[in-house]
Length: 292
Image (cartoon, rainbow, N blue to C red; front, top):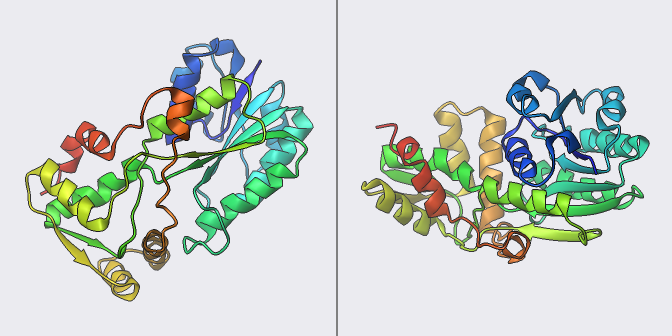
């Protein structure tokens, strides 16, 4: 069995590679990246590193050659991802891959306010279902590590500015997501399955402010804003408008319940409960307190 991991130089890809090296011999692992030089340390451990660029479809069949199972990690090229993912799935068929696992997100539906972040993932799932390949979908919740920058800013400013309303998020660590992916890639019985890989705790915006206060020792006050006010604030402090709209859209999706998903699949796959947001923030407490 040869396992292909795309996007292997990214946050999740590297963690998956580390997890796989605990489960399969390094010569059975192929890491694909448009930046192969970034994976030299993993190549030194015996893995094969290949160049592959989703924007260069001709590079993909060779990059995937000889693989039996593949992890298709969703790219961060919002607006181009559907075309990229489609090229990767087509190349997997050409290369003779038998099973593709795709990293999606919770609630990847067209009407999700998170826009292309959501619908591109959902459309990719459909492409995979229709590809003729055996497939598994891992729908990840919100990465707990992505809470660190806004948490650090909130601690610095002593206030947390959000538009979550009464919505809740369920953070999950990248490490847990990577472990779940490695389990699926190296064990049987996952064909045609969609797993929701989430944390086990949900947080309101006021509970986030309380947690940041507790961990930092500095009172963080919640400043709830509506969408227009948050967008205006973000643009006013220099956030590029597309990024400001994206942040606001994410908050609107949280407010409408699209990220309030708790599922036991992660513990069933890995045999242990999810790492908590508290644990992730404590592991990065130096960064949490780095500014101010």
